[in-house]
Length: 309
View 1 (tube, one colour):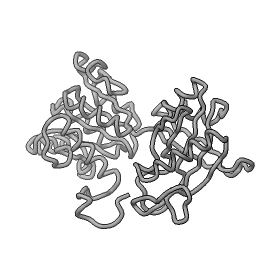
View 2 (tube, helix red, strand yellow):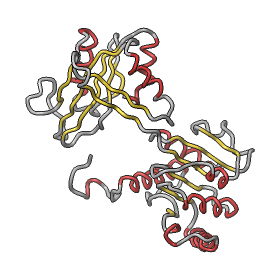
View 3 (cartoon, rainbow, N blue to C red):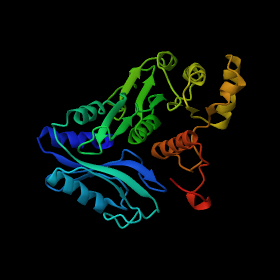
View 4 (cartoon, rainbow, N blue to C red):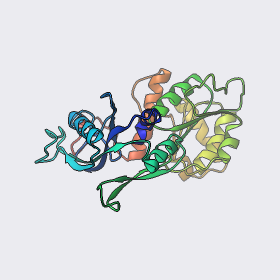
C-alpha cells in the first residue's frame, strides 16, 4: 500500500475517499507480495495492482463495492471456491482485506504520509472486522535500502535512475564539486561533494545497503573501498578492468585489509550481460546486487525448476 501512498493521499487531500484492497497473505505461488494494494477512486480510476493481472478485475470490483457501501471484506482471491475470482494463473491465492479509506481514518492516513519519507520505518494496523478492532492486520514498511554511488560520472547517473526504480535511497558522492551537483544527478536523493571515504565513515550501512565505486581512480578507490569493505554493507562493487582489479587487490592488501574483507569485493562490477552503455551497465550491476541479496543463482528461469516467486 505504501508504494501508492502519494496517489492515495492526492485523492484524500481533495476530500475524495477510495476503496482499497490490500494483500494480507500469499498462499502458494503468487506474483505480488504482502502489502501490495489497489485503490479505486470515486470516478472509477484504478491505482496500483495486487496480482500483476491475474485477479485485477476482481480486486477492482471488490474495491468499488466497499467504497460505495462502506463495508469491510476479508477474503481469499484465487483459491478454490472463491466467489470473486477465476483464480491466479500461477496456482496460488491471495488473502486480501478491502475497506473504504477517507481522511477520517487518521492512523492509516498518517502512516501513508510518513511513508513518503523513504528513510522512515512505518507501521500501521489495517481493519479486518467491523466490530472487533483486535482483528487487524499489521503492515510494516522498513526504511529503504541505501545505495552509495562513488564517482560523479555518466555511469553513476544511469545507476542512480535505475536504483531509484528499485526503491533505493541513492547518494552520489565525489570529491570534485564541479561534477557532484544535483543538476547532473536529478534522480539521486542526495549528491555530496566530499571525499568518499570520509562520507562513508559517517554513514551507518547495513546488510541491505550497497556501495558502488565507479571512479576507477586509485586516489578515490582504495581508501573508499577500505572503509566500505570493513562496513556492514551487503554489497560492495567497483568498476574497472581485470588488470585494474588485480592492482586494487594488491593495494587493498597493502593497506591492511584481510583476505576475508577483500573477498567481499565484487570487481569487475556487475553480471556478464554483454552490455557496455551506462544504462546496460546499471542493469548488470543491479542484477548482481539482487542475486547476492536473494541468494539465488542468477540463472535464466527457463533453465531451472521449482517455484519462481
